Image (cartoon, rainbow, N blue to C red; front, side):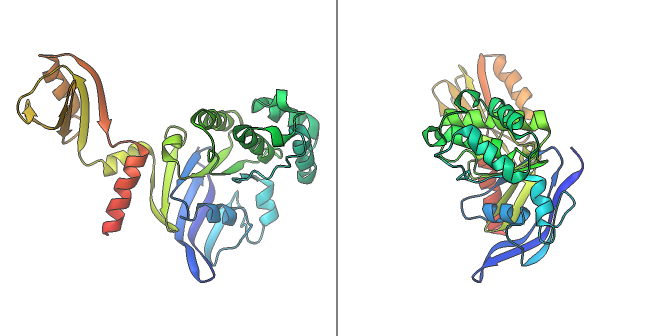
Length: 305
């Protein structure tokens, strides 16, 4: 990672007088998985359409792999693959025939070996001759990504890839995406409102709301910036009668656990050392540091501005 592959600079877009993208600016580095996060209706799909040259911005500039999608849309689409929520597959055709059909449209050389390789990569080799209409939602999503990869794109846009999947299907698809990035070094922009599913997948995150950039950064950077105080839940046999222990305030007591409030991470080992002198400690968890909690913290702070 390091080379900038995508850049948006002060992009505006409105439909029928309603602005859906508002001065949006961000970049994506080569080889990274960028989580593009926000609630439904926040502008994620519109941004992907702008990046892929399907629609044009009202203002601002976009560069994708060195090209302007407005003036060089075909060049951009040669270098990008897209998975929409519907995946755009033909349900009366087999998985293999779907890939061969789209490979011909994309001008893929040696389409049969390429299609068979992708079916194997996404665990669909045994279903190659089955009609897509018989597939589960997870299988269709995987085939949709395989379709998007037929022409060896260097950039992949995934729009709500885990939507409609059960927890096991979502986990499997996330693992496929992770392997895809590692195996092919594909740069991935993953748009979703399901923050918990992508917390451990993406290298970096961008939060948008009503078409505006709220914040961006790695999970650790966001945590360092927005986690002002540490709420620490400790599973322990320690029994405390007051509202503090060793000078550290206790927020909540439950049978077998205590929740402490600390000023900084450096206090954690000091507190644990004091507890371990008198009682065992079984688990320790910092609360509020997950991606979803940070998102709502960020939303709350931005709404106050």
